[in-house]
Length: 209
Image 1 (cartoon, rainbow, N blue to C red):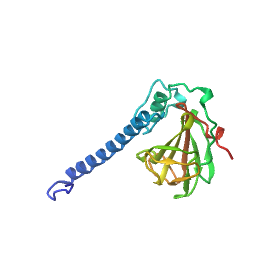
Image 2: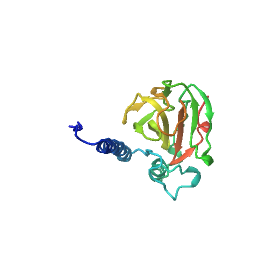
Image 3: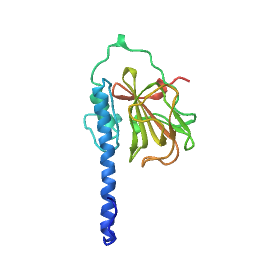
Image 4: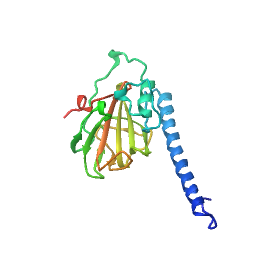
């Protein structure tokens, strides 16, 4: 059904392939929207991300990276959590590698970068529910995991995802392989973020050695 007639011009071929690419991007965006709805309807405070898709003016500049994650996290985490109902939470390092870039929100870097070779195992920093697992243009193969106490973890630029959306995972379980996918990367590494109540936080504050 997608065969291209041989009589079409070079320009028409370009239009054909561009149309298919746009359809693919639209499909990914629909999956992100579905993940958001799914998380809300199942009682989870959720979020998802495609950079440079939306710019939200009411998000503080140091946390606005021009992405859906900033907006959706803020929207879903508006409910206040009873302090007495909170459980203790801790996170482990998601990869065995050196930290080459720390949390610098004032410079637009909302996470921590681990220097690892391509196809190095990426581990779940804590147990949770896979909210999103798919390819995005800027961040490549990316996974977002929902945890207890309104925490989210985000894993970007992977080469392969070992888990799917809606999977339940345990702490320390291999969930992906690191890589260099997506536009916003200059070499193999893992970009890792932690969000709490709709605000990005420094991973070093909650990761145990």
